[in-house]
Image (tube, rainbow, N blue to C red; front, side):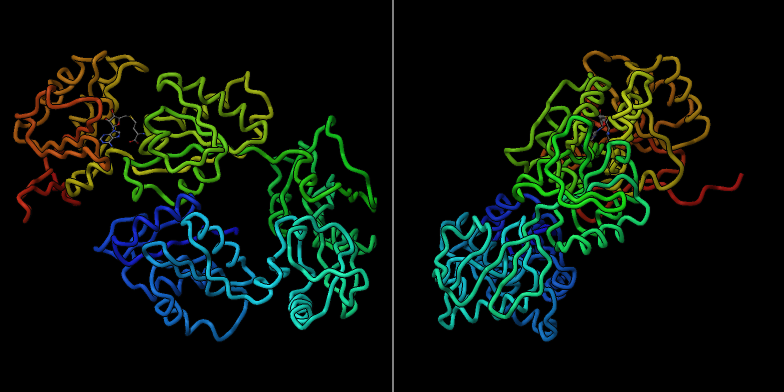
Length: 552
Ligand code: SAH
């Protein structure tokens, strides 16, 4: 399964089952009917949602009646092309029905989900029932040569033909296939490119590796090398390239187009024997598909991500994907916990929040060894958080060259000021500035100077790190400076734990504000001279700063 599945529910009664399925597929996104249930993603129309997921080839696990799913997708079913797995699951978890996507592994998913829910899957595919396996859907590491040939073959077996296996098919050891020495049908597992006679089913093991030393015209040269050697390109397991090409975008694109992994080899790597050597392109053959995936190592990736303020629904899909794909996660323990659900195989490196540069270096070391690493910040990673520390570590002269070969990405998140502002309305609707009141990393005099200028410029201000036990007096001093530029009725917004269970929002005036009302989990917004407040229907207040500023 390449695309993460969508779990679609109608109401809260399906939520428990949906969560159990999500525990099985942590990448899965739960879609819930707007207003009825709060989950990862809200939708307005069930049918439209199902159809658009289907069109984008997303596996669908619908927690509702099978009939509703069929009726919704009916208009799209006439032209049978590639189709994603579609399953209906009873909302109480008592039944799992694979509906569509037999070639996309729907039965395998149905078995996995059924096992997780401790029920049995309603498998109806004759071949699979009879033989205990789906010959048309071999495990990863093996590729069916031709689907039409496969369908004929399975129907012949259902019609009473026997088969023998020529080659290595370890996954069929436990199957109930009708094997016989003098069988009329042959299942051939081979890397060879061949035109099969009608009594043969061809499956290619992905054991061949192409060694790249130049990117020019690579895809065509790979095609030629396979053709000249009489080998099937479906047996290509990976491209092996020298580490000097790690940052090469064109090479990455070729691998993506061929849908094979790209791995890098150094002088010490032990390579499998060569099967063919053409004009600057060698083909190697590993002992098995599993062995082929252990040669060389992938380009490491370092994603510096922002979780947003807290709630899962304010986390971007790109960040969720990076978290799901991560092998190592680094960050302050609270943030690593906020990144859940995580799998047991994902390594958590929790450390004290203050060791930023050290954590950044550790992240590069892990990524440079080929791992997928995520560095976690709350809010946005570029706002008083890890992204700058990571870049600083990379720019250091002592940074090893391998760090520069790591695929580094910074994925934005909703920063506390934006999350707090949205709760209150739009206090940052006009020009504003963000200031950290922490003098741990800058002199207090600089902060005072900036506060003074922001006051003169009549900017709305958002204060991060406003106060802490170690910095008890700074906020009071900052407010003294602000008060020299703003009247006591200036609007102030305090957002505490925004997006988290203990969320609290308070609207008050600068005259009322005292440092005791604020702690380190609070974001303080001081309005400009134009910021306004008015009652909202529910008893609270809206705050906004108009788009226009009076002409002077
Ligand atoms: N990178 C973070 C900011 C880290 S600095 C971001 O973009 O949001 C830490 C400060 O951010 C805290 O002292 C507090 O002022 C503010 N903050 C972070 N999360 C918050 C939340 N959920 N609610 C209110 N303030 C928050």
